[in-house]
Length: 214
Image (cartoon, rainbow, N blue to C red; front, side, top):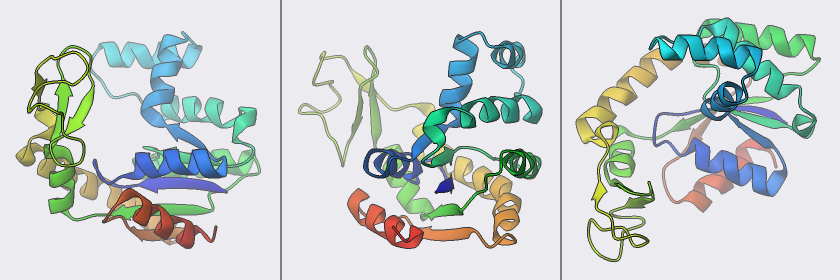
């Protein structure tokens, strides 16, 4: 089964993609991960992407599609894949469809992880990061033994700017505005699948498997 996961920051799609990979053998393909891999591996597309990134510019759709194609052509995607973070725009969705047609593959489901703004703010604004080692905690879900101090190296914990409540709300607004046309694209192809992503990880996973017919 070939899937695309959509959802706002903090919506839980990355966590659920990792669970599907562990339990069902589908390969999670995170756009950020494969972009970093291409750049660090000094591939032709990675070098081109680096030139844009070094100038502080967005990587063009054609380059991103090429990097995604290289990843999709690896043998480990034969049992199915989960695209996490791609496509982000309508041109990317159209290019992906053309690419998959050429590979004689298709998207089976485009899953829309639906969570309230309050839930996203709660999940992200409670996150704390270790200054020294980057270890991640959460004031509610994974608190350190001592407030604001890392359990592993006793370094101070801090809240990232992106995780402040006002910033999280803006990020969610931007996500919803940018993604709406892409979701309509997949709704028109009868693969759009809304998912209630509120609640505990295992509760959401059970809903996800049911929605996918697994």
